[in-house]
Amino acid sequence: MKVDIWSDTRCPFCFIGKKNFEKALQNFAHREHIEVNWHSFQLDPHLKTDLSKNHYEYLSQVKGLPMQQVRQMHENLIQAGKNSGIDFNFDEVKVSNSFKSQMLVQLAKKKGKASEMEELLFEAYFIHGKDIDNVEVLAEIGGKVGFSKEEIENAVNSDQLSELVNHDISEASNLGIRGVPFFVFNQKYAVSGAQPTHLFAEALEKSWSEFSENHSKLNILEEGDSCGIEGNC
Image (cartoon, rainbow, N blue to C red; front, top):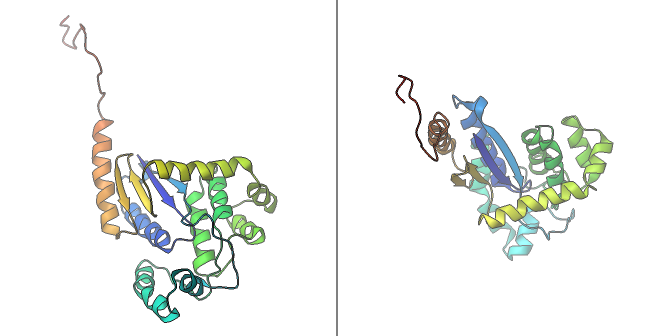
């Protein structure tokens, strides 16, 4: 069964959602039969990397709000992060465009390591204050997943990977996805946002129940004359 996840590497709720979903998946009895497919998304595709501002300063400027108010707005987010095992470090976050990092996720998907790449990119951006638009930084991150510096340099200049990122973004638009994280279970049920672990667990159980039932029997499109197992013809 497939679980498709749209995510932006500079979205704090995507980091929390990933942690909570993976906790639910870890405790799911049929987790070995779940295929997790990560998709690219950009909340602000026109964002220009600006290392002179941290997360709070950037939001204060674009929203026109006092710095203290912006910090207060993040108190619940920081606590939600702690509850999920994340120590957000917004004072050190470097405001970076995420497109190149999304290209790395597409590269990692080819080797089945997209989840590991997502995790490392989230940690680099939100905890270690790294510029995820910088090729040297991305090469360091890619190295932890088993990619050479040359592979990373080629990846961020790849037309093919760029097209894959844009395809995911276009698909999200066609599905009406306007915010992330966004989870689609069994191509039928959707969960929007960084929901608690128990909700992801419920989504997995419900989706799996229908998936396993539909795959335990054939859907017969047409029935004609035939012979039965008791020899009746």
